[in-house]
Length: 158
Image 1: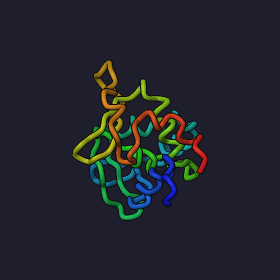
Image 2: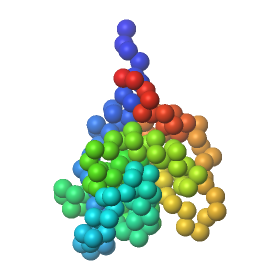
Image 3: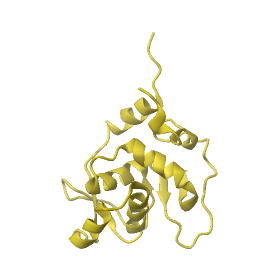
């Protein structure tokens, strides 16, 4: 008899098969964002750090910190994995679960939906929108969880 996977197990199973290198914000030419901006971002508490990363993603590309490959252009939605990879560039102690829980707690400030093209739940700050798109909370995401399952992801005991 096999043990049922916990929500955390499902997330870890997914991210362990993905690139976990941190992401850096950069310009289209690949040049990194200036160090002063990065230094200020490091000081932010987690919720504000995540929101700042989403704000920066409106104007800057996301680049892999190891191979310098630009992965995402500006003004695109970012998955929780992408957001976490940005966050760990600034604070390596933050877990994917911390990011997921924060995204859930800040859902009223975000536009989110499940993207069938990349098969991930994605997030973005509203620019000219006065609403958040949350019509698919019951849809299973890349972790095989509903968005509601993210609410207390850090409370599950392994």
